[in-house]
Image: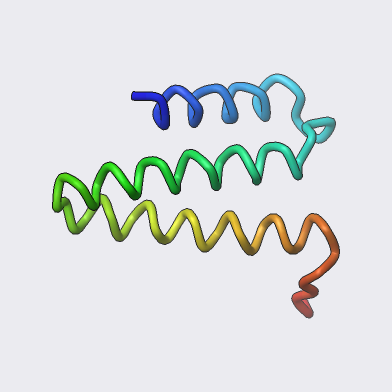
Length: 75
């Protein structure tokens, strides 16, 4: 439940602040809730939900690295 509430808070923050959102905080917060939800899915042996949340952990790590300028993706 904590992970779900964290996700609701982060998406609400982005919805309210739009481009003025603190992107590093949002990425870190989303990644933390994805880790928490992944752990819960692993404990419940829910393979689909585990895969989904592990994917969001990877997306979060990439988002954090890009926000910090440590990862450049050529467009």
